[in-house]
Amino acid sequence: AETKHGAERVLNFSGSDVGGEFFADGTTLTEPIIRSGNLSFYQLQSQEKLGEGAGSAVYRGMELTQWGDVPVAIKSCPFPLNDQAENELGIFEKIPISDHTSKKRDIAQLQSRALLIMDLAEHGACNTIQYAISTIKDDVERTTAQSSLARRYINAVMALHSSNPPIYHLDISSQNFLLTADGRIILSDFGLSCADGASVELETRDMYLLGLTLSTMSSDSQLTELGQAMMDPDAGNRPRLEDFLEMDYFKDQPVLNDVQLAALAGKLATHGVT
Image (tube, helix red, strand yellow):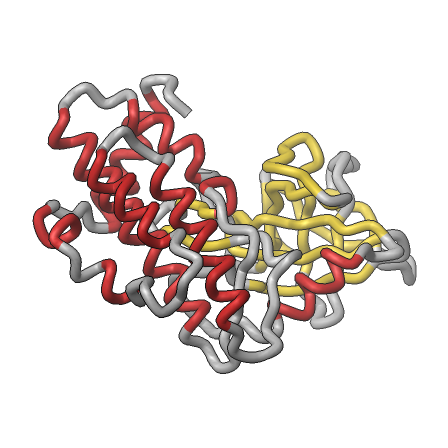
C-alpha cells in the first residue's frame, strides 16, 4: 500500500493476472493493474497508443512503485504470438546492455497477451524529428542537427553488429529509431532481427537500409552520397561503419550533444512541429 492522491492504494488481484486499483475513498481507476512474474506492477494507458504494427501495439504505461510511478512503454502482443512477436521476445534476451537500443525492463504474460515493458522514448520516433529538423531555416543549425542524428544512427547499428553474437536489425528506418528524453537515439522493433551468427548477407541488408535512411533524411548532397555509399551491395568495396564516422562529412560538422539534441526536439515540439 502507498499514498497517492491522498488515499491509500491497495492492489487487489483475486488470484488473476489483472486486477483493479482501488482507493480507500471508494474510487476505482479505469485501467487495469498488471502484475508480472517478478511481482512488479504496471498500468497500461490504452488511450495513449504510441504506435502499432504486425499485430502488436505500443502504449504509454506506468511502472507502479512505492517511490513513485515511472513512465514506460508497453508493447502488447496478443496470443497466439505471431512469428515477429516470438522473435522479438527472443532477441531481447540477447541484446547487450547499451545506450543505443531499447531496454527490456520486464515481461508480463496474461491470459490473452504478452506484454513487453521497455524504457519510454519520450520524444518518439525519429521520422517526426527528421521532419521537424528539416523545417529549421538556419542552414548551419539544420545541417548540424541532421548530421548529429546520422552519427547516432550509425552508432546504434554499430552497437548491434559488434555484439556477440552479432545482431542484425533488418528493419532499419527512421521510424524505428527513437529519441529519449535525455537525447539518446535508440533502435527499437526487433521483430525481423536475427542473432544466429555473423553473416555478410545480413550485414549488407542492414547497411542498405541504413544508407537508404541517411540518403533520404535531408537535401544535403554529402549526406546523400554517404548514404548511397553504404548501399553498395559489394561488401569488399563498402567501408566499415566505423570508417564512415571518420569521413570528412562528420569531421567537418559540429555535433549536438545529447542534452542539446533533446532540448532541440523539445523546442520544435512546443512550436507544433512533431
